[in-house]
Length: 252
Ligand SMILES: NC(=O)c1ccc[n+]([C@@H]2O[C@H](COP(=O)([O-])OP(=O)(O)OC[C@H]3O[C@@H](n4cnc5c(N)ncnc54)[C@H](OP(=O)(O)O)[C@@H]3O)[C@@H](O)[C@H]2O)c1
Image 1 (cartoon, rainbow, N blue to C red):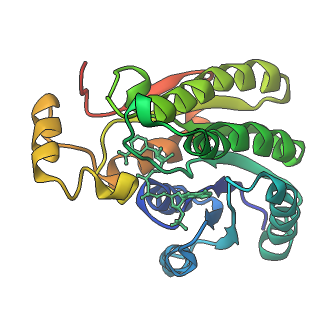
Image 2 (spheres, helix red, strand yellow; image 1 turned 30 degrees about the horizontal axis):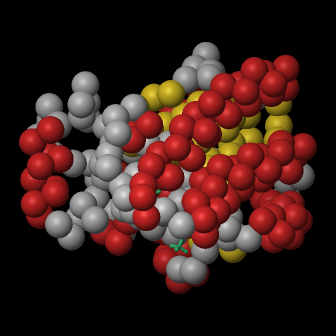
């Protein structure tokens, strides 16, 4: 039976893993990607399979622009071989990395890497995949609270995330005629491996951020996946072109 299919980039760990699990729990088939942690990606697939879901893994490096066409070819082949499908429904752009670098010290190489992964890759991978997206599907771009409040050392990261927030509005406008919705989820600080575990491994920073939150803690990966999964259902069919911050109300 052909079910709805979601592609979650960066589903090997952190937020993407939770998104993949929660989307599968809603009954969708899932393709998740990894960049270097193939084993973790397969563990996520096994977790999904244990609960009766279907999932498969693909390699994706958003920093290697020339590899995107090959990724799209593999994606089409895998949805056919694994799920008997020729098209898919939901595209979740989650893959990404963080680094704290003061503005004055940002190199061109770092700028280019962040641009490729967080913006250029999102732009062109969507352009390449939208041809095989079903009418009525959706795009969910993962941004960050740091586009609303400035965090020193995040000038490159946050400005790329700002770019995909703008891009999301254009997806919503230009793909609406295909019935495709596009929205942004902007998580606040979450303790994952992100930015070398900057929040998780630094009790002082974690304490400061927790005190800034009305709910008195930083986020966990499990705070995000369910919201993304909701956007991968018809229950959210009238939400379009929106930035939804999922941050526990930090800096509200
Ligand atoms: N954690 C936070 O505080 C926070 C807050 C706001 C927004 N976000 C955003 O949420 C998303 C996920 O963050 P996270 O906290 O889950 O990070 P994470 O735990 O470090 O996981 C990052 C994921 O992205 C993949 N990835 C990294 N570089 C990649 C590349 N060049 N090409 C393709 N995939 C790549 C990783 O694959 P491998 O496992 O194979 O390396 C992994 O699956 C990112 O877009 C991040 O900007 C995070």
